[in-house]
Length: 171
Image (cartoon, rainbow, N blue to C red; front, side):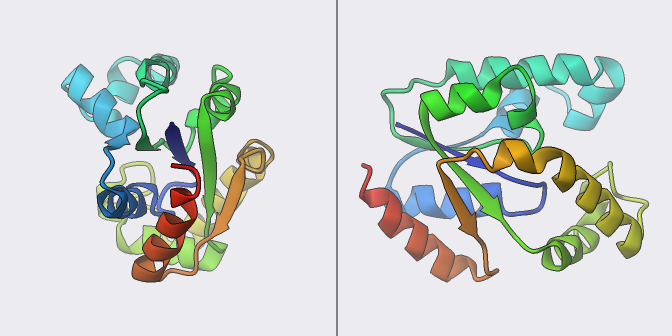
């Protein structure tokens, strides 16, 4: 069974997903990493050279390539659920967990790590908050369709244990 992690950039889909997968001894996959490996280019380069529609088509192709009979945790890009009926596909082919974190904590995380994220590298804290707020307003109706909404409290060790115990009920 595929366990899809969705949510905003910076919410911890990859870091939390890796820890849960390790604890449950199941594979972990990151859709962004898969696309980077397949294309031999960074996401930023793909957006610049091929455009966003191409990238979004690659995301749709990647999630549909996963074996639904195999148990694995899949961290998705923040925009993936928004395109190509990806959310419907994930809901029909696994468990979808929406990772949610309050706006202030999320903005602080992104501000600290902005050097790694070309889309926000040059933004100040207020601009990051504004961008996040607008993005979440656009995406929340789709994100809210997830089977499970998990409110992160920014304690990765406790969250790993809590989500691992919960997911064991489905495995």
